[in-house]
Image (cartoon, rainbow, N blue to C red):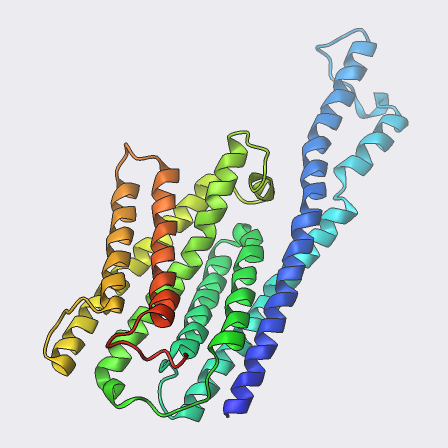
Amino acid sequence: MSALSDQLVTYAILAYLVAMISHAVEYALGNARAVSARTAAPARELVGAGLGVAGGSVDAPATPAEVAPSAVAEVAPTARPSRSGARAALAGRIAAWVTVLAVALHLGAVVTRGVAAERMPWGNMYEFVLTGTFIGAAAWLVVLWKQPSLRRLGLFLTLVMVLLLAFAELKLYVQVTPLMPALQSYWFIIHVSTIIFASGIFLLGVVPAGAYLMRAGWEQGRRSFPYTLARRLPAAAGLERLTFALHAFAFPIFTFAVIAGAIWAEAAWGRAWGWDPKETWAFISWVVYAGYLHARATPSIRRNVATWISILGFLTMLMNLFGVNFFFTGLHSYAGVN
């Protein structure tokens, strides 16, 4: 089962990569469809206006018999969807379905890893990243199902999946081992599952947050990099609302996870809080995310400022996951890597 899990992770990475390339094709060709849609309506208007003026009367609309065949020939190709637009739509649909396949493979990798270990697959940093990225990708499918217009965000989501899973395979991978005695508690399931779930939602939330900052800059007239990446993204207002919704959903779960960890620490170590490096950074993350939600609810604080706070929150989560495990030692040293 362990070997099967490893193979499924590799297949999932490849599927996410194919989905990312398909999203990139949609992203590149999508502009032609937008240009075609913008030029179709003005073309019809200009033809009608020109005929009215030529006939000496602006008030009387032209009848179908009065419209020159050449004018119709000029309008018809513009009104029809462009070939590039059709290809972009096809690439987007392929990307969405390949992402579904990738998530299914991802789920299979998580499940078979747990079966091989005969425990929940959250015992080390590799398994944490494997499960957390699955939560983020699965949540993305729910968002995509609810709001298909956000599909182009999939380019950035699949890029994040490829990078994190590839890093996990290359740098974090460890063989399946039994759960450490200190983790053999029902609190392991309660505490770690909620931490992973919240982390996966925060991972998804940082994607529209970054996209919003780029799109907002583009809508404000900024034409330098990286704002040029956002000209084909959905409107900034919708991206900002999605960012807030995801963080508002994940924050209470994260809060419960931190409280559950304190209860477990009291039972296991005789104290609820000891400022262990992981505890400290979990508290920092909680404060930053609480600050984001407060800033988002405060009318006097601009939305881009609040969004930057949410990105800072995710950076503290990365520090807690990677930085603490690599550079610090403490009671939470269960990463399984040197």
